[in-house]
Length: 364
Image 1 (spheres, helix red, strand yellow):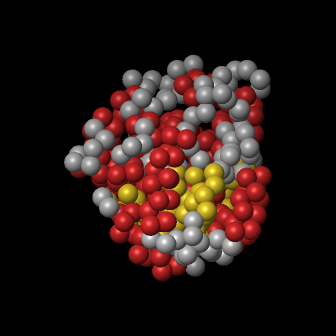
Image 2: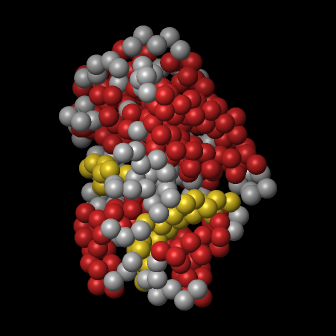
Image 3: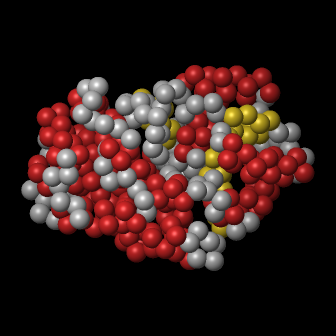
């Protein structure tokens, strides 16, 4: 069975108020889950809106990333208060935690993204991290969210950095799926790859305008937001696992193993992962166009103030055995790196990163 999409999706201006009657049909005692102080005002407004509609509402926060310690604590809160749904309000980690909790307790998940930084509001997946933010594994859930609410009025309040991060994460759909699934004969998978190509083109064309003018009146902004939060999720739903991740995400997962005070966003790390994947394609798979793709991507990434090296992420790979740690985690058993149509080993990763960090790759 394929889990393609949320049951109901509300998008655009006033999406939250349009969703309220549907939420009322499936829940009376929701738990509101959030995290960031910066988004507390929106959560309090949602809390008030639900009280006005006679919901019995409970509210709590994620303390860390989506980690087992937090999830166990939150599960006890849900059980104690007999909550009948989870309304997850925030970024990817909050959305993943809300989906995981709802899935574990067999109650509906309602996702309300407050940025376009990932497609986590759409998917039937939750990424599990340590308390320190190190990736552990992703877990396939029994269903996509019951309801997803992409309220543009909420999204426009997010920092520009989150949109840039979402653009990088969404771009990975093309660069990963076109490589891992190009020989798959399944029609749905091939169609998913083509959607990812169209999404890539739209992000390359509209990304800069969306980043510099975060306004509901800016069509480029609306299209990019929905591309990152909705279309990217649809691609994974239609195409399945190989249309979601490959080397870019494998490298992301490995880089999170290095504890950093800088705390880069998910898509910021994935963007660097795309550049490294393209370099691997060039050196290991004789892709003559990879370097041109790197130049094209770096041009956009610099306009969006995105990192273009691991050093830009606040990590020095040449200390504390960081290079070896990244290579080992990237190439571990069951890593997404093994979806590539050519063999990769730890030494390949080490050599590519060394060249990359020393800027031996011509990217300008």
